[in-house]
Length: 280
Image (cartoon, rainbow, N blue to C red):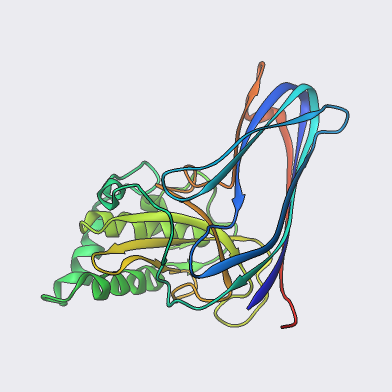
């Protein structure tokens, strides 16, 4: 499937920042499930020049691009456009240049830390599976996550943890992913957070935002994706960007600003994502 992406992110600051450095994880991963036909990332900071720094592929196989801006920045825009050809690998990530040991992803973070409710849910989910393999266990944990949460925007925030989300019983893809990761790690299954794009949801409805899902490690098979929010494994509708321990670690755009900067300076954040299928 050929997918076309346009992703525009605009940050507006009041008062202006004095300078900033951004790390961009916005280039699709290189593996058997997807091929980049065209991809372009542009940054604009108004009258302030944008300098492109290092560009490299890090240990987890993600492509990182760094940019910096000097001067008083009132608005910073990152625009991504491109075309990616995808195929359905049943969620299995084949051929990714990944040098991080899977066991590293057993480490819990604040976002994924499982409380007693999550630990009990994970235990109860797996207890009836007996000697089932890790792949079956992973599917069961993903299904349990889907059953435990209702997809409802506006009920959680970017800082909401897995424990908080399971208490609310509602959330968005980030919450579903943190819950699944927390339960998987609590069950000794390495798991990581993945960011990317999605053409449409499981019901075929258009998906107008960046997306997130989990990958769990299965010995002999490798990393396998699970989108608990849509009750499926990633297929040709998905474009994979990068991964990390949680949403913060895997964020497509991360940065620091120089000067007396705090969250109150970020007056407005605008994100516009469009993923469309191209005619074959």
